[in-house]
Structure formats: structure tokens, C-alpha cells
Amino acid sequence: MQPTNRSSRILLPVKMWFVYLTLFAALFLNYIPTGHLPAVPDFVALVLAFWCVREPLKIGIGAGFVFGLMTDIGVGAALGQHAFAYVLLAYAANELSRRVLWFTPVEQALHVLPLLFLSQAMMVVVRLLAGAEFPGWWMFFGSFVAALLWIPLHYVLLLPQHRPVDRDENRPI
Amino acid sequence: MVGHSPPPFFKRGPAPRVKLAFFLVLSLSILISDINLRYLEAFRQGLSVLAYPLQMAAATPADFVRNASNYFASLVRLQIENKDLKAMQLEGAERMLRLEQVEQENARLRALLESRPRQQVRSIVAEIMYTAKDPFSRKVVLDKGAQAGIEPGQAVVDDAGVIGQITRVFPMQSELTLLTDKDQAIPVLLVRSGLRAVLFGSGDGLMELRYLAANADVQPGDKVVTSGLDGLFLPGLPVATVARVERDQAQTFARIPCLPAAGVESFTHVLVLGNREALPPRPPEPVVINKGKGRKARAAKE
Image 1 (cartoon, rainbow over the protein chains, first blue to last red):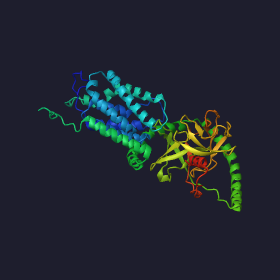
Image 2: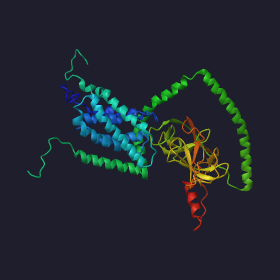
Image 3: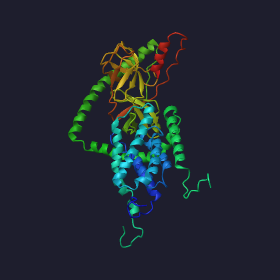
Image 4: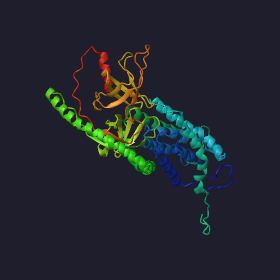
């Protein structure tokens, strides 16, 4: 894999345990009780979208479903609400990956923003159909913040793959 | 070769669209059975045990922030608070003394009248840990659960009145739905006029008295207390005050928004009231007449 498809640098292959570790870290961040604070991004959706774009052959809908259920449990939402949204998000991210990876991180963030927004909108539609109250437009700020976070995330989550292939004894990093 | 697709180069399992359809149907059916049918409580309990360690770890920073602000509270503020609390306690003690005497008198009078004694209820003190993150509902999480004897359906009060009802119990914590939640209803009584009604959450931090006729005897400032008709809440707990009354002759019912009496959206310690004894069995329903009344009573029960 390359950082982006235009880059000439070839990265190390990703390790699956690292993918799941970051997903669990995102789950942890989602579990932090921030109450009804506006503009708190959905970290699991963001990290899931990231890996679904980077590694469409290795991670996808199944992981979206499982982590969606875990998010539902933790935040006290209706069971299946996040699972539904993440399944759609993972599918769309997988499908878009061949296009998105040609762009720079900033442009990638612009591609991911509508995906995150739509997955949130799906949740709103599902809950409103079930008779919940509309929480207000502020909740959609979360996806904009998440899209902004895509840019640093692009560097942080790829760090382990930036390591050199041959380990140099005199230069430990 | 016509009509045959070439064998795939890479093995990817089922086609993505098949997988998508499968998981969408699966999550939608889970969603429907959770929201409408409530079949999945056992499943949720099981998963919550898995999520609990991570949840507790995630709640620690919030705990830390809350406790740190306590730690750094200034001495002067604590002294003032202490003084206020002492004054309140003194005031309360005097009323408690009278209450005890009045309670005994009440018991004696009730015995004389041969009516049922008022119920004593066991209660559990719990602390509100945090607001649940789900933006579609108004729920908070308490730090005590099934292990402390909390059961779903119990009423929760603070020092000023009712704040909600336990809706979901986990082993170590429980979920409290506030009265202002859109799906929450509570049967009430207007103190001044003795009118019975049902109070619904309206979702914006307020509550609403519904199904009261446009000419009903309600005034702004009326105190609303629980009527106890549901068999869950004790009768006479303060719930709300009527904020204003909007009567529109075009409509059958008046629109009556109410302000919650307790600090429904701001609190730390609460009291979970134990279950009441079962109400006496209902008298047999009259067969034909009084259809309207029956419906109202049922609405109040729900």
C-alpha cells in the first residue's frame, strides 16, 4: 500500500491486530460520557471509515456490524441503530476506496464527510420513525469535526506502516 | 464460454452487495425487535457485561474531572454550604419530629376508620454517574444496579420531587429515564382542583398535561403531584407546576405545559424508591355504559 495512490512510497502491510486495536480505542473514546455535548465526533465511525477505505479487502461490513452493536450497548441507544448506520458506512467506504486513495488527505476528508453525515442522518431517520424526539441540528456538527480529524488520523494510523523494512541495529527507529 | 463468468482471481467471500443486504436486514430486525417488541433485553444484558470494563474505564476521566472540581472547591464556599445545610437540617428536624407524631396519629385514625394503612417503602440512595450519550432520549446512568436491589419500573426522586423511572437494569448500574423524556408518562393529580390527569414529557425539558378538556379547572401555578393510580409511584409526591394554560376553543383539549418540580436535569444524589405492594384487585368492569370513563382510567393507568 502507498500513503496515497499517487505517492511513490510503499508502506509495510497493515497488521490486523493494529486495526482492531484502533477500533477498540475508538470504542473507548465513544464510551466517554460526554452527555449531550454538541460536536463530539463519532470516533468508531471515523476509524471504521478509515480502515474500510485503506483496506477494503480486509475489513468491511462485518466489523461495522459488530462495532455498531458495541456502540449501541455503551451509549444506551436502541440496539441495532449504530450497527445499521455502520454497515452502510462500511459498504460505502469499501466501494469508494479505489477512488478516494488517489486524493490528498484533505480531499479524502471531503470525500468522507458525506459518508459520515449520511450515516448519522440514517440514525436520525430510524429513531424518528420509532418515535423519538429530534435532538436538534447541533448533533450533525459531529460529522464535520470527524471529517476534520481525518487529516491527523491519516498520519497517525499509518505510522506503524511507515517503519523501514529492514531493522537497522544502529538506528532503532 | 457464453453465459459463464470467469472464475475470480481473489477469494473475497460472498459478494459485497449480498453481505450488505444480509447485515442491513439483520440490523433492522434487531432494531425493530428492540424498539417495538423488547425481545432483546437478555442479549443486551449479555453484551453489556462485555462492554462494562471498557465503559468503566471510559467513565474514569469524567469522574476525575468531577471530583477534581470538588477537591479544589474553596474553603469559604464549603463553609457557606455547611452553614446552609445545618440551617436546613434544623428546619427539617423540627418538621420530622412533627411528621413522626402526625404519622402515628394518621395510623391510629386509619385503624379507627379501618382503611388500609399507608405503605412504608424501602429506598436506596444512588448517585447519578453521567448522562447517557444517546441524543434521542433523556436518560441518565445510576451507579447502582441489580446487585443493590434495583428493579425496572421503580420510581426515582430527589429532595424536591419525582425525577423519573428506572427503565433498564444492569448488574452494576441502571438507566433512569427522566420525566422530560418524550416517551415518559406519569399519572398525576392537581392538588388545588383534585383533577386527575396524565403528565407526558415533551422533550424540550418541559412536561405537558394532556387530555384535559379545554374548560378544565387548571390555573398557572397549580401544583401537580403523583396520583399513585399506576401502582408504581407513591401518591402525593410533587412532580411539576403548571407553567401556563393555552385554551383554544377549536381544540378539544387544552395545551398545558408544566415545569418539573425536581431538578430533573441537574442533580447528583437521588433516592430509588422500592416497589409498592400490589394494589387491591380492580372491581369488575361495568358491562356497557361509561365507555369514555373507562378509556380515561386506562389512559391514567398507562
